Length: 213
Image (cartoon, rainbow, N blue to C red; front, top):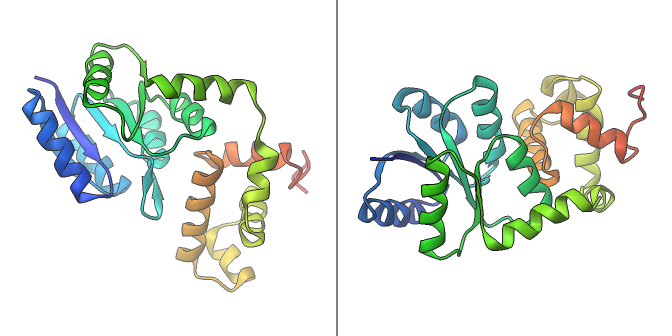
């Protein structure tokens, strides 16, 4: 029996998924709304498959994908999200997600994805395949930069220059926790998962030059 772990910040969604999956013969071994809690549980429970939303209150599912990849955990991941942004599809796949579906997909499509991914294959929902193509063929980073607030641009610039949350907070008169929240949200907004990718974004969009100035 395939053992599945659920990560979504809406209890009703998790309850619905659990009922559907258990009715389909799968075992749901646990669930969480927070990436940190989920990571601890994944290490403990060692499920076969993770069903993951990308938008988790003030956190991002990309954080969990990054940790899974960094630790080389054997769990296979299917992203189930509202996000139809090409850059999110591309980043999720880059971080190791084997499946990507949009919420609202038919039950049959989700079960097909779980079956394929559990067998070591990949599965993209019908709409997602086109999004993946767009991510490969279009450069929309200038548009992404325009979506950021002046405060978010400040924080990106300081983060890529190597300043800590405490240092940034002192300069901008914010608490380190508030800086962390800003950073998590803006990284999710532009679809990057680590500081290296953030640096590349900042250079490509002209926020800093290649020398970090």
